Amino acid sequence: MAVNKPIVVVFLIQTLYTGMFLLSKAAFNVGMNNFIFTFYRQAIATICLAPVALFLERNKMPPLSFKTFWQIFMMSLFGITFSLDLYGIGLTYTSASMGAATTNCLPVITFFLAVLVRLEMWKIKTAPGIAKLIGIVVCLGGAITLALYRGPSIKLFSHPHLLFGHPTPLTQTHSNHAQPHSGPTWIKGVFILLSGNTFWALWLVMQARIMKGYPSKLLFTTLSCFLSSLQSFALAILVERRPSQWMLGWNVRLLAVAYCGIVVTGVAYYLQAYVIEKKGPVFLALWTPMGLILTMLCSVFLLGEIITLGSVLGGILLVGGLYCFLWAKSKEQMTIPSTCKAVQTDKEFVDLKIVEGTKDSSSIV
Image 1 (cartoon, one colour):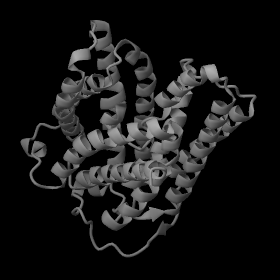
Image 2: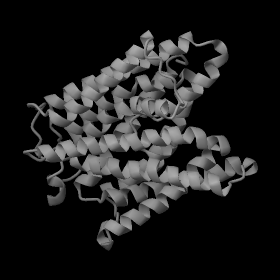
Image 3: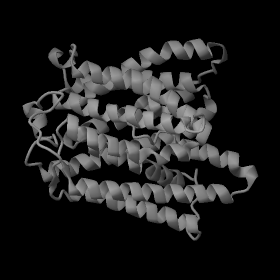
């Protein structure tokens, strides 16, 4: 059983992230403002992480200079706050399945940005370099397919209603359950999701540099969540000041923010760290498509979403591009000298550690 334990754990991780996609979409379907949602989930994450971080790392707290604090602040703004807000908007315009599908682009986007800032080398004339190029092109083709081609609907059974409640008049125009689906709205939603992933990838690249000056991972994560909470609150109060929209109650809104802030932040982060330690980041990334499959199936049965041929084809292209890219990374890992493997592993960790589909601020480290 010890040999199969990482497989069981990584499957559990994908299940947890599936719940994140479904509950987030369900909360938006009943009219929850995505900016308020981001604030609440970040606030809950901060409340949960702070006691643990202070207890475990209070005796080894590194000094926090103004420069480092400002870097973490800007990183939180772009890589967490903007990323999660864009993700929420894109999810409102599209579907839970689409949110899971676009996360398969994350390793590719991260690698591309790392090359631009010279944190990664890309030997284009080698076999792994060509495979990376093919993977990037295929992922790009998948993203374009998701955005521009809908195709016929694939109905597994009739959907009399949504399990988590009916969409409000506002969300009906943005829900995948609504028919007919607006082409421009869908296209806009897909590219907003990709923009959110781009900000998230930028955060990964920034984190590699910032953590050299502040290596305490738990305190770093807690501070990032806290700053993101303040930033998210400022944005949310600007766009929504009605008290009724800020009230959670005992409903799917409270369930969604509590799940994302506690379960995904605490449990999923710990499990990801375990899998990376036992099997490495590439093994973790290889299971990313499982999250897409689980989310797609559950969104059909629980949210009443209608899967289209374009979504299936686009998802296949994204998964194919991801695996092509990861194959190239593994080949490079096998050919580099042993003295350089530690450095290369660190770069892979930065590139791939939160690829689980997550648009979760706590999956930061």
